[in-house]
Length: 451
Image 1 (cartoon, one colour):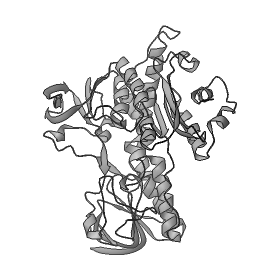
Image 2 (cartoon, rainbow, N blue to C red):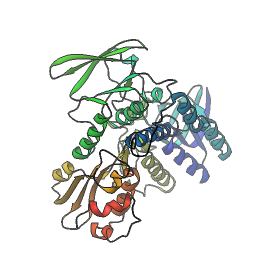
Image 3 (cartoon, one colour):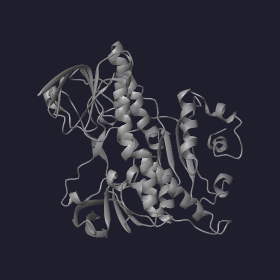
Image 4 (spheres, rainbow, N blue to C red):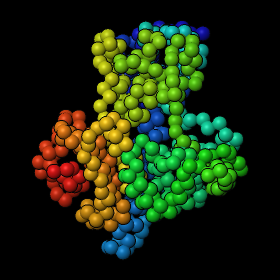
């Protein structure tokens, strides 16, 4: 076995790991980086970036359908094979480009699953790597369902690389992945069913605005089954039957493809964390305010694998910057839990930042709640968008915006204006004083906030 020593070993080549490794190397440290997957991370190859390419096609279909008979005379359709080929122009070059960039920077790359041998030693294949610091940035993987027939499920990676789109699709789960894939598949012509065990989908988002989105989804034929727990999957790769329990009744539904969209967990199963005295909980590796393992000070964790923050790519990069600063300069930079905007890229998109109304009530916040369905507003009517709406929460005493939840075209961009306002403590009245370009989605902000 080859034994090598480094100042830093990074496990994972996504946004968090790449940020740490490159900054450490720039500071003159010797750095090794490991990944069991193709280099470049989930977001750029198997997640948000390729998904957004597919969403772009779904948006075209949705917009054309809305304007049929209102100036648009022919509805387009998605050629799935062509769309996949276009997607691959983004994803295929990433592994080689990433490795070449690392090599040019003097970062030593290793392929394979990393396993801890002790607190400061990693084994990968026939190599043993020792380091003063180790950073875990392995991301997340699909949550095991522990049901019969689970092997028949296709995960998100498989869905984003389908050579052809099946006629019927079942999505198990009611979060981001289920809703985004449902819109892509439905707009591409598939019959889609979502099966979710909870009483409502997208449970981390505002219930009223989610209800607007559900209305839009049902309007294009997406079937959503709630309080339905999947108990088994049977069949084969061409036709599968999902058995689920709903209201004390056992029922079944069949489709050509069943997709795992029931959440993700920290990808730590192969790391042998116990050998390095690293604690982990349900959300991931347990870290302190410096993103350092609470039980092994030589180890830091950032991105989806850590138990702080939302599983979002910008947050992973931000956490990577915190980690490397603390490694290089001693623990002096804290994780900032400021609100982070997030978007469900449905058609139309659902975007959110800050507290929901339910969370504000739990915290005892005295807030002014403004909520409205906006399909009659000009910004929606001009594109004949059938469903849109918003909810904002403003602190009654300070005038600060504490939550914003938007549904409709442009919401994924407008939410960033709310993020800017909240980050810099701009009051609702200060936002209302801004003259926005009109007519734009941003100019609607003035009508979303109390006078």
